[in-house]
Structure formats: C-alpha cells, structure tokens
Length: 58
Image (cartoon, rainbow, N blue to C red; front, side):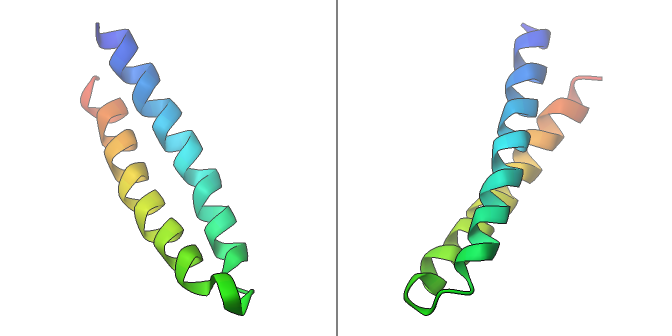
C-alpha cells in the first residue's frame, strides 16, 4: 500500500507541474486569464498535496 501511495503522489505532483505551466501560458491570453489563474492555483495546491504524500511515506 505504501508504494501505491508514493507512486500516486508522484503522479499527482508530475501532472500538477504541467498544469501549472499550461496555466502560466494561458495568462498571456486576455480571454483565458482567469481560467489560467485558476489552473495555477489549483495545480499549486495539488503539487503540495502530491509532493507531501511522496515525502510522508519515507
């Protein structure tokens, strides 16, 4: 069970990193600026949760 949680946390951290980058590039388009900001905030929260799940297993 520990290996599953570590792998799942790493997967969430990995996906949230790319979501943050997508949200950053969406900030440059005026029509998608609010959505990009939401992406960045949610991905930052998901990265913290995923990374802390990985570190918490050790």
